[in-house]
Length: 277
Image 1 (cartoon, helix red, strand yellow):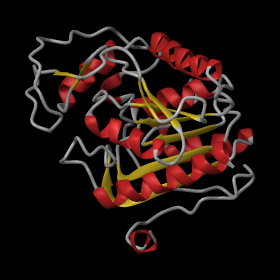
Image 2 (cartoon, one colour):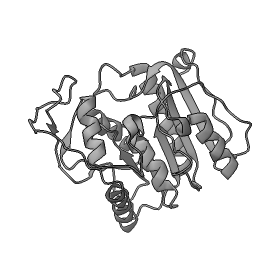
Image 3 (cartoon, helix red, strand yellow):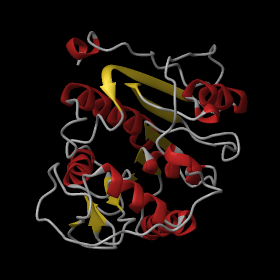
C-alpha cells in the first residue's frame, strides 16, 4: 500500500479527536447529489423512461435501458449474521456488480455486510438514466430501509454498525448517521450542505476524487470544517488523478483501480478499528 500512497495527493488522517487544525482540499464546482438543481428539499419524482433490461453490469447501456439485478428490492447479505454489521449504500447507478464485490471484500474481513437495493430491482451504467433513478428516489423511504436493515441486524446479534456509502449513498449514510444508529461512517465523494447537516455522533472517514463538481454550499472543505466544529472525529483522503465514481469498477470510464484499492484498504482499516477492536 505504501507504493500506491506515493502516487496520490492525499490528506493524512487525523487522530480522530475532532480537534485537529483546519484541513483544506481543492475541489470546486457542484456536488453530484445536488447536480442539475436536485436537492433534498426540492426533489421531484421523475420519469424512468422505458425499461429494456440488459444482462450485464458493464458500461455502454443506452439511455433508455435499465439493468435488472438479482434479489430485486431486498438487501443482499454477505458474511456471518451477528458479526458487526456494515451497510453498503450504492451510488446513483444502483446496485451494480462492483458494489456486491465491495461487500464481499468486507465480509472477508469479518463483517456481516448488507447491501440494500434502493431502486427496486434495477440499475444502470448511464449517467442520464442514473439521474432519473436518483430523482425518483424517495429519501424518506430510503432512510427507513436503512433503519430496517440495522434493526434486523440488532435482532440477530450485531452490536455495532458501520455505514459505507458512495455518492448518493454517501449522502444518505451521512444524513442517516445523524440519528445515532451508526458507530462509524464512510462516505465516498459525498458531503452535506448546511441545511442537511446536523451533528454526526460517530467517527467519519471521507474519500474524495481530485476532480469533482460541488455546489456552493456543499464544498467538502466547508463540510469538514462543520464536522470539526461539532466535535465529530473526521479523517479524509483525496486521490490524485481521479474523478467522481473512481471506486466503481462497473463504470469503466471513471474507475481508477489503484485509487479504489487504496480507498478500500483504508475503509477496511477504519471500520475494523471502530467495529471490531
